Amino acid sequence: MKSDTTVLVGGFGFSGVPNTLINALRDRPDLKNFTVVSNNAGMPGVGLGQLLETKQIGTMIASYIGDNKVFEQMYLKGQLSLQLTPQGTIAEKCAAGAAGVPAFYTPAAYGTIGMHMLTELLGEDTNLLAVQTGELPVRYNTDGTIAVMAPAKETREFNGKSYVMEESIFGDYAFVKVAKADRLGNCQFRKAQNNFNETMGKNAKITIVEADEIVEDGVIAAEDIHLQGIYVKKVIKSTEPKHIERKVFWKSPEEQKKALLEGGAYCCAHIGAHSLT
Image (cartoon, rainbow, N blue to C red; front, side):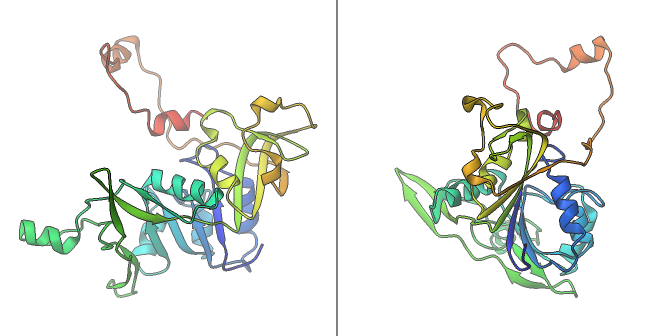
């Protein structure tokens, strides 16, 4: 690998995180100033959180900071740049880049209003950050003032609906975690382990896979292959244990009944569902 390049890292929370590959990069402090694209930046001492602590990340493209206080403080103290991007937009930026599409239009983030606009509306200062108008700090100075602001997004209307234009992401490297890979590089994910991994694996110039299990060619049925070997450059055996982000204790039948949904209700299966794997 080379410094000053873009690395796509799969995973959501602790599900499908390529920790073996991340740890290998952590152990190469001579490699630095990476632009890392991932849903979030891990936790202190775990996953991408380690690359923050070793100062190997120069720019982070993520959907949220989460509970990582190291990430938060480095951003606020001007020690790295941050491009906060809606979660689905990150996925589509990688998918579009994989397909060779340079940019696309999305309704996500259209209509978010800027800090000065909200101040005029409410007559007070606010910390609301806007994607569309570009009033989103990318980097701070060490004194807390804003050094770089995100540019405003181009907008356009299609069929009476407004959209913002997003440029695609093109990765130099991708770190991908899979359940099973054969020696030709064909890969199979286990349930939510897929998350961003498949899209990122198809995007980068060089995709490196870590697999829980490496099998012989032909063991994975053709219809069960999620990431084809044509996209994969290297496969290694995963050596890191799985981590659990939040432990949830067993509830009594009475407590479970209270949490049951009414008939016909809809449920947004968010972090809990992804954490199952």
